[in-house]
Length: 558
Image (cartoon, rainbow, N blue to C red; front, side, top):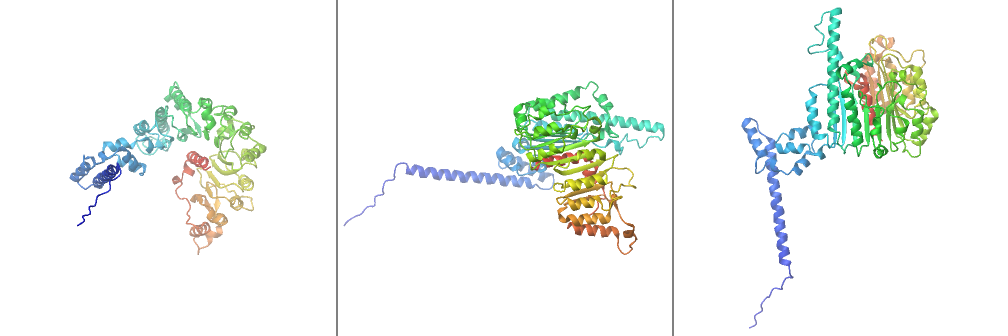
């Protein structure tokens, strides 16, 4: 009888140990996944919450408990969760526990910080907390100071509503107004200092944008330096602000975008000299808008502009943009300029000359240097004869915004714009902020055709048209809508600017207002209504802020 024995073949050395190690690693991964699932389940149970004090306490215990709570999650996971949430939800989620609150201001979560502040003492502690947390690492900082309208005299104590009539009442009201102005200026300087101090050592800053709404600090169009001298008699705060701004520029290592508009006494003609040559050579956007610089001094000169060889967008006061600057921008060592925003202000025109502005040949050279160059012009209270000098035929004008308080734009100017810039113009804003709404100027007087209708006919790329303070006849508004159709994305005309012919009003069978709305809506291919509340549109109520924001988006759209 033969007996056959099965003898197992010997395994190669190390095979058993490798298989065992693989099984152990697999079980460890499974156990780790189960632990993470349990933690997330506990987190979700805690986040659901229940009504009542007892349930809120149990939910809080579930969040911060030892076994399955928010505090037991690793910081990396919490930051990853925060990265999917918008800023308001991040703030609410950070109230769960102290560990989540510590993760809220992780630098990767706040690469951009955009703040719009009311010039109010209540904003200062909030701003100090936020800038203390984010100021040292934020990469893009955009701050807008929005002063409350202290001149409106509405609400609250000291608004003058209970003052006696006559000379005594006027003196009391003037004193209260003076006190409010001093408070605004004092708070404004403190808020600016808070922002600049917090970022003075930030070397990661790539975009820095400041906008100061100083229109509320103006009386009848001109800034009163009397109040500033009372708030800062020795000029120490102003000098400190200017020094901090220059220190930020000198400490910057990655700055690509610098924008400062309508800020009070922050930028000086020597501020840009603080920038190193390496930073100036790599700067892509530069915006310096301030019409309160005294005399003939400018914020940037030709020598400084020569350092900015990589500049792609530029925003300046029109009187500061000279023919020599245009020549510098056409040099071969400069990259082609693609966006140019120019502010034409009556204050600058009065104190500075237009003789040094670029002529038509300079504009032709700029257009040859960059075929994609587009220009945005904002005109504040500029006379028609000055506009005729400014509007050279070769300007690649894409956007123009007229804002008037004293002077009015003539029909000849609108007709000139429609003939010269028909290939480029996309945005046209015409605003006349008059107090007497009974007699708006009519651009079609003594003309066979309305200049606004000709503008819509000639400018085939027109996508935005906004009008206030000028008479717009109903039949002309219908013609504009039909000419441009759905390509006209925005048509904003205030209700008080629209007028009707006597024949339309005499027709009893047709409601002229309803017919206007229906015909314009059909022409545009979308529902349309006249602007009933002018306060709801910043283009009419806050022209400075609207221009600054539009200039920012205009420059970014490259």
